[in-house]
Amino acid sequence: MDGGGKELGRPAPSGGGVAVWTLVVSNLAYLVFLLCQYHINRRRCDKSSVTRGRPDAKGDALSPDAVINLEFGDPTMYEAFWREAGERAAAVIPGWWGMSYFSNAGGLCWYLEPELEREVRRVHRLVGNAMADGYHLVVGTGTTQLFQAAMYALAPTSTDRPVGVVSPAPYYSTDLLLSGYYRWAGDANAFHGDHGGENIELVVSPNNPDGAIREAVLSSDSGKGKAIHDLVYYWPQYTPITSPAAHDIMLFTMSKLSGHGGTRLGWALVKDSDVAKKMVYFVYGSTIGVSKDSQLRAAKILGVVSDAYEPGPGDGTQLRLFDFARRRTGERWRALHAAVAATGTFSLPDEITGYCNFTKQTVAAYPAFAWLRCYKDGVEDCAEFLRGHGIVARGGEQFGGDARCVRVNMMDRDAVFNVLIQRLSSIT
Ligand SMILES: *[C@@H]1O[C@H](CO)[C@@H](O)[C@H](O)[C@H]1NC(C)=O
Image: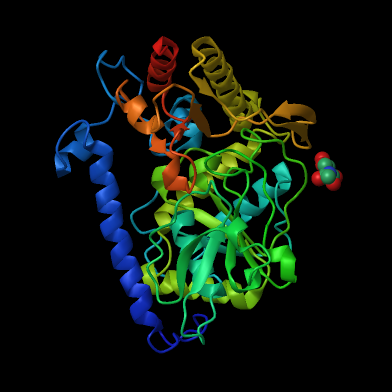
């Protein structure tokens, strides 16, 4: 594709293209590295291990000595729901469909499928978690790409020095910001009142890894600070929906909403049209749009999610995704709290409760990760300690926090989660 003389956002600043491509290549290398790490416990890293090394989707019993990997946020808990949904959630794509690079040639986000746009706006209206009206919708290959796109859009291109990206600890590590425009600068609290406005703040709420509800730390200092709000967990299965969020840039992903991590589909709601155009330009420069097959599938899935909550033909209650996920995450959190209370070796953050304007109930938050702290004499590194018990989790120091904490994925399949509970319960 050559762009065909279309207006695709602003032209690249000189040298900008190189920075962007360096970033893309680095990300690819990093992803291969991650995939290899993920399967290293099962087999050496080769192509076949990626297809063979997975537990059966139905969650067959694991062997007693199997290492369970809860280091990543793989949302396979949702498979059970979508198996149940069956044909109703199947997307069928004719061979001739979606062959052009363009979806909506006149629109700001020219590769965005109109059907996906309708369903994204609809699900936000249904849940009331974000203002979608009056916002531009920019689609990306997962929030990973949109996060980079947002930083590319916000970073000044005129300064010699890359702009800092900060977030209060513990934060989800973003050490792959390999660009001439921006660099990871660490803990936002360290910048409070100290040239804070020059940095871009990443606000993740509910926060990864600890589930805390957050607001910008720096951006309010100067009133002109720049922030990116990562709201991928701001859905009713994880946290009370208190009001529709209305920030300048808000990121969401299918992965955390419905469990379709493999679809690699995320979106940003963006207030300012110039920022949105730059983000679209970044996506153009790195992947020339977003797979239409993925967009169509995401639109289908979102449609099934919303249909179940709206009056219509048939009884949709069997297919209520947020109810299913809340039930599951609630059971899991109760099991985890019981296991932690039984051992006396670990602790968890205090439970957050609040009134949810979607469920119309006061509910507890059930984060997608457990932020577990070890309290055992002589244990300085909780991740290493758990590895000795066949549990792989991500150590707290990788989030700018304490090595006595670990982040544990709560969204794996039942069989894996049950082994986690058994093993934690047996640690004294
Ligand atoms: C709560 O939801 C209702 C719609 O069900 C909406 O009209 C109202 O504005 C919401 N309130 C808040 C604080 O989000």
